[in-house]
Each structure stands twice: as structure tokens, then as C-alpha cells.
Image 1 (cartoon, protein in one colour):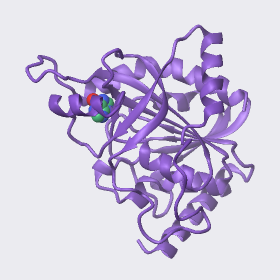
Image 2 (cartoon, helix red, strand yellow; image 1 turned 135 degrees about the vertical axis):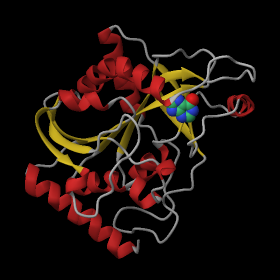
Image 3 (tube, protein in one colour; image 1 turned 90 degrees about the vertical axis):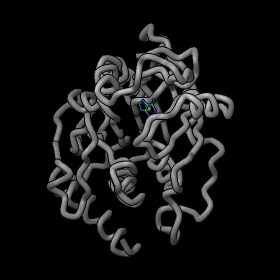
Length: 277
Ligand code: HPA
């Protein structure tokens, strides 16, 4: 899509949401990953806007993804959540994979919370672990390739402190108040839709990957481009196979089941963090 048409679609989508939900700016946007959509059910006084109702907006097709914006309050603050995201593996161009972040930026968010289901590549990680993302390795095509959208951000955004240090520290404090232990790790994102071969898992370990996934990074790059402060969390839904003759295989269904269990804890954590922003 031409840049002007794309910017018009972003602005029109934001206006569509404002017309229904009111013009008060949300402080935080939340992107809910596979199986983690139930955080959306904790939002108070919710206004639910299905993506399919927004003219020109993409519709999500992935398993465990619903496809709604939900505007309301969480932890006493106004938020907007995306229940369902757009994955590159579904065939969307990067403009569409990341459009929700830009729409939420236009609506006025200052913080972006992203969540995902991920494979535990770090051999110490276990299914159900909650992991604070501290950095990432991007193996997707960069979503900022093309003419720079000057009104959103600079041509060459810095990527030194992508995952906000203060937010990571706040998460640690909140988790310890809750008696929950958190891991921290590097998210390695590639396009999928294949899971990794054992040889790839061993390779990615050697370059510093703790988590393997197929989402999040494009949204985070676009969020940093437009100056949002980012907090990212993965739920470990499977332990990556480093053994070529392993007996258990990865499946999309078990990913969604495991994510559902951790979603309750993550919801409480996000709620308390947002209350303290
Ligand atoms: N690899 C990539 N993406 C994933 C995985 C995985 O093992 N689990 C959940 N999303």
C-alpha cells in the first residue's frame, strides 16, 4: 500500500475507534498473544470493536486469536488492548502486521505491552514460565523498510534499550509482591510458520536466544520508531527440542492450552504494573 494511503488508513481507523469509544486517550496499548486473549476479559467497562468492523483494517486468522480492540480500564487506567494480532506467517505485509501499534499511537498511548506464547530455547526454561523480554534478535524483514514515515519517527531508530529498564524493574517488584517468580530472556523472532529443527535450536542457543517465537518483534520495532516505551512478556508453552530423535513434537494446540494457564497470572501482573504507571 502507498505510504499516503497507509497513513490515511491508520488515521481513519483511529478516528473510527474514537467515534465509538470516546476521545479520552489510553495510556497503554496491550497486544495479546496466542491464548492470552483472556486478559481482555479483565478490562472494566469495555468497549469492544471487532477488527472486521473497521473499514480497511486486517482481520486475524491465527489459532487462539479473536480479533478485537477492547477499550476500557485496567488497574484504574485507561487502556486499549488488541485481542489478536497479525502474524507475518499469515501472509500480511509488514505494514498490516504492525498497523495496530500505529493506530494505538495515534490514539495517544505512551506505553506498549506485548505478550506472546514462545518456545523455551534456554534449557532452564519450563512450560508455564513467565519471561520478561530483555532484548531481541530480529530475523524478520524489518517493518521500517521503505520510505520513512517522518510523522511517526526517525529514519534510523536506536535499538539499544528496546525493552524499557524501568518497566522491567517495576515488573520484578510487582511479581515479588505477588509471590510469583519471573524469568528474563532474549526473544529470537523468525517468520515461522514452521517450528525450529533441533539443529536450529542448538544454533539459536549459541547466539544467545532464550525464547523462540513468530511475532512481537515487528510490533516492537514500530513501537520504538514512534517513541513508545515497551514492556514484553513471553509465556513458555513448549520446551524447544534440541534432540533430533525427540519423541514429543510441537503443536499449535498445546501452545494455546499452556498459554491459557499462564494468562491468569500475566493478567494480574499487567494490571498491577499498569496501575503504577
Ligand atoms: N517456536 C516458535 N514459535 C513458538 C514456539 C516455538 O517453539 N512455541 C510457541 N511459539
